[in-house]
Amino acid sequence: MESVRAVPTESLSEKLSVQRLGDRLGLTQMRANVFTLAEGSMSRHLHREQEELYVVLDGTAMLDVDGEHVKLGERDALAVPARAWHRVSNVGVGPLTFLVVAAPPTAGDAEIEGV
Image (cartoon, rainbow, N blue to C red; front, side, top):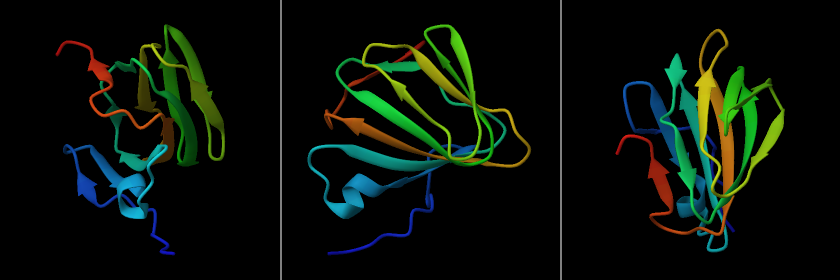
């Protein structure tokens, strides 16, 4: 059994980094990632089959889920159902770090707005 330090190390963009916990821990029934987001927001997207659980670890987030805005602080959690358009924004001071757990771990499940 292996433990992994949940600190984002892979840069996805100038403002977003990730630690792919599911890959590192060999998860097969769910996807789990820890993200750090500097100022700004992620792309608006949806998952056709996956439902997601967002947990803010550090910072303050605003989640826009199908047009409804929900502000989350440290240790707050929110479930996002499959097929719901959503976007995470960092609305606090400093970086936003959050955990996302999704199931099922379907590859290529996301639709990204404008792509």
